[in-house]
Amino acid sequence: MNAVVLVSGGGTNLQAIIDRIADGTIHNTKITAVISNNAGAGALMRAEKAGIPAEVVSPSDFEDREKFNMALLEKVESYAPDLVVLAGFLVNIPPAMVKRFAGRIINIHPSLIPSFCGKGFYGLRVHEAALKRGVKVTGATVHFVDEGTDTGPIILQKAVEVKDGDTPEVLQRRVMEEAEWKILPGAIDMIATGRISIGKA
Image (cartoon, rainbow, N blue to C red):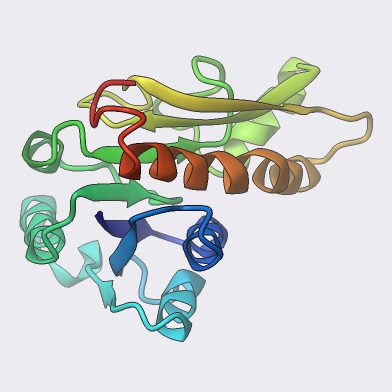
């Protein structure tokens, strides 16, 4: 299975996928490209280090959003992926891409959906909201991407304990280590080995 991974930041989830492919935890899978909307993303260096083609498609290089969306879709299509993985990609996926790869795009979200998800909930904001609400358990979710924000069928979830004295940064790290880095590779392997039908969680 050929996978294209879309990233915006440091690429810790990307690294988890690279490592799990390398150690055989993820079967039958090759990352054919890493694409970022951010030329300064640390994930691009991780890709290059692993010998994976790394590309940048940045909104700032296009005169409007429509042209960016078209360029992003064309770039992803050029690698003919069986699966598109959003691993901390902070850009709304254009409807045309959702349609083109219907049931073949998955996303990792740092909460137990349906809590703390949807428009405006990304990155540290999710953990800030969880702490403000006083929840005792949070976690992460891998889901298929549909036209909505964090509304597609759920594939895997893993709960993480919220501890006294947690800051958003500390909680974010724990959710990554205990949940995200485990369930994202897990979901990819489930798809690659046919244990879950594409688009049918």
